[in-house]
Length: 336
Ligand SMILES: *Cc1c(COP(=O)(O)O)cnc(C)c1O
Ligand code: SF4
Image 1 (cartoon, rainbow, N blue to C red):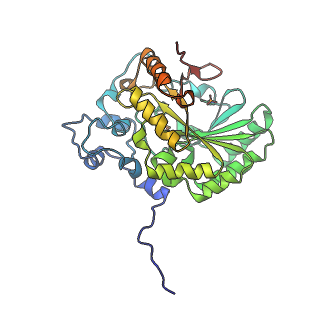
Image 2: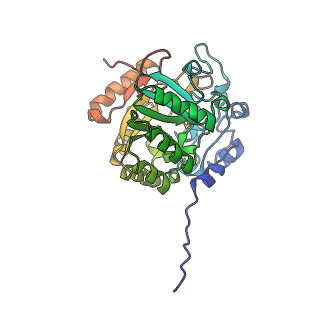
Image 3: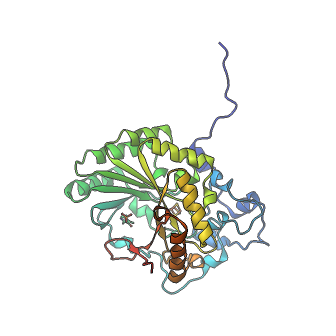
């Protein structure tokens, strides 16, 4: 029998993650731009590291200093400006941490910080200063988390967050999900991740098997801000999740110069829905130090979504929201 050697072997996600671009010169070189055209800040890159995996990089238009994907990952001098009203912990999450790695702010659902790592570092991220080192889920902490979940019958949903929870290896995720399944009052598992988009190869057969075989109803909330982030590889990873009985939603952050137009938001909703993904939240920016240059005013945000509402079926319009510390839920920005 002939032995056929495949001429194309797909690189696995962990290798892709390791091969991510993490310095300015390399990034500029890859996108065919130089710092005379595009202001960059080495200081900002020290403050919050650059990280751009190649599947995402490949979707950036070369030679375009205004590319909406590039601007999400490029450290700019504006990040070093400090403004009143901005802070390092805008959501005051450090005050609602009953066990390491666990945030219980809202009724019925708890958020677990599975991994401090992200596959991509988004410059506008509200967790850019989060002390992940103090919130690692080691095996002892995991037992504490399980005990907390067991003790509170009102908890019906567990949310895997981060960082990026899918930066966790499959075996460990599988064990965690099996432990959660053993708690009878937990009905749903939600995973908030940008990995299926930035490294679509992350949606492995093993992960899909774990999710498909779970008794928990599973929701995956992707994080896509611009239609250009979705290519055929991403579409494939979405389809794999759906085949594993996962409900796939998307949340975005409204970002000046990236997606703050009706056309952009409309394209995004329509493109995602061609793959069966429904919009969930559109967040206004959290006031974190270093991200003020992405801010869109509430009035502009409301006007945008009002217009969007006249252009799209209601189910393709995301809920415009922000998180206000101390409130029992996200706060919707009211449309008039
Ligand atoms: C956003 C968030 C949730 C989830 O809120 P939903 O409105 O259900 O999406 C849960 N816990 C925390 C701590 C959150 O920040
Ligand atoms: S937590 Fe989400 S928004 Fe923040 S850097 Fe990671 S992937 Fe980006």
